[in-house]
Length: 116
Image (cartoon, rainbow, N blue to C red; front, top):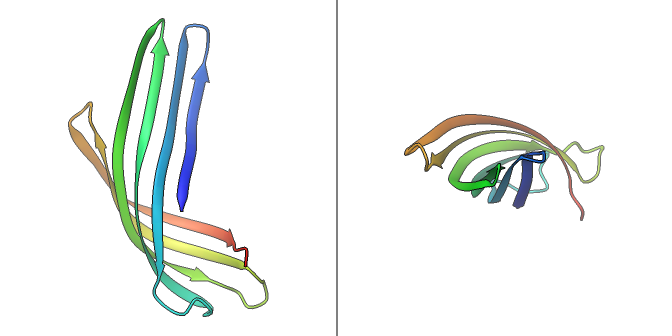
């Protein structure tokens, strides 16, 4: 998976701020993909890029991060190409300007349509 996500954007005549995420993620299914309930593992990495401009003073920062986790995807037999997933992950992101890292646990829920 390739992920591009614009988080926020603010603009005025003297101030502008943007923050975007760019990343990649790989999923690995741990059982037969034709099953109703499919466990999977994932790993990912990405960068958050923030830029701001205040009265002509410009600055930008990049924050690198990674994540790892596992989940279950459910494929109901009565709905073709549709799946629902729940996952638990752990990740870390380096904050260069503070000289530290932010770490945490994430919980994700998803609804997916697959083109076959």
